[in-house]
Image 1 (cartoon, rainbow, N blue to C red):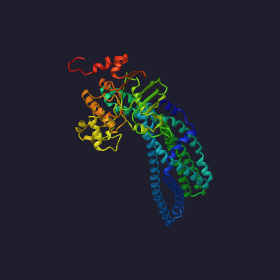
Image 2 (tube, rainbow, N blue to C red; image 1 turned 120 degrees about the horizontal axis):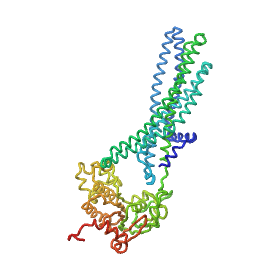
Image 3 (cartoon, helix red, strand yellow; image 1 turned 90 degrees about the vertical axis):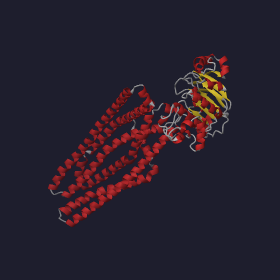
Image 4 (cartoon, helix red, strand yellow; image 1 turned 135 degrees about the vertical axis):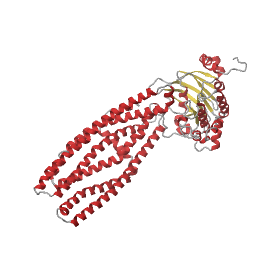
Length: 600
């Protein structure tokens, strides 16, 4: 992610900027009728704005100066009717514009969620959840504004500027020239402001993502923060990042506070000059008061779009920066992806072969080196070794969360890269070392892999995982909410629900990634007894440091530094592997329950 952010810091060419904005508008295509309707209504409103000053001129010159009360009444009624019509058109314009732009936001958030779901573990290994949340919420909302009201206001301003300029020139070329003298200066200033404001807006969005990440991590780790008495330190860290964000927004505010007043100043200079010169023409009798009022009204309609462009261009610059961040996610390519003609993996028997597999995370040192072993159906395979030796990586490769750097993995003789991901993973049940539960009911957590499962099937899975009894003791049984990350449950309870979730999918391959790490000895014995029946007819991989599990394994793979250093059963390894003997004496044997006599 750092490299990506560095790419964002480099200036983006005008051509790239236009491509980004154009891509945003591509999401409006399915809703073109709303957009087209809003733009047609905008033209109607612009037409009313062009007519109003002429009606005002007639009302003053003929109605007031000409002392024709009836004509004045007609003009006033006409102006009132146009005001009402403009109000109705403005309502539909706002409604249709908002529907179209909100639909764009809807499509983008769905697309981001879909992409984040299918992206490989390698992407999430380098990502920060707070930053991804910022892109999904704040950045998409800025794109929504760009494709909605911002674009409409720009087009409206262009139409108003063009039409008003033509009318002013037609009315009085000399007055029009005087009014338009400042326009080149306004255009140059707007361009200069945009080029300075864009990098700052991008930094603000990135810093906001940092703040979001900091808050998310503090909420997630609230108990750890309190347990280690680090409240003051975390408050200070957040304050430091918040100060950086504040300084950037203050710098942005200074630029914006200078931009609008300067544009307004330039525009008002034209107004003052027109009042002076136009007033002298009225005194000389060359134009009427109504004529001057109409001209001034048109001039105000010329200044308003200029002011609008000054504001909206700022929003467009921010939205373009936001779009880059959103499209960076949408354009990310999963490292693990299905081949174009991948087949569905047929119901498997459980024969697994790792054929000289190597793996490394990016450019880092290899995690696995020449892993080669075969597993027969229904066998229990135990993976043993020190932390970081590659045990979990072996099971992650089997589920194809990552692809081997070299070598291949076969299930029933089929390379798993040749089959669809869903057909592979649907036949594998996994209980992770770090138990993940969702902030919903116990029932929905157990049925996560099989949402259509019946209540009876859910209960049977919970009983098999020795979870049914404690579930029934909760206030609402299976309908009890477990809180975020299952915070209302103990570690052992969460793990038993995770085991029930895996059992319910009836997998052909079962992976228990240190699944007994958070349960006491009594609970472990209950779960092991239940799993004895569950493992029948399944190939089971167990990552554990419990001697009872290793004794039951048909094959133990002893790993160290990414390699298999020994293999065999518990009894075989005790006699053939010095490495296994050391682990047994130092780690496993001291944890073994004492026999009835009290001596080993």
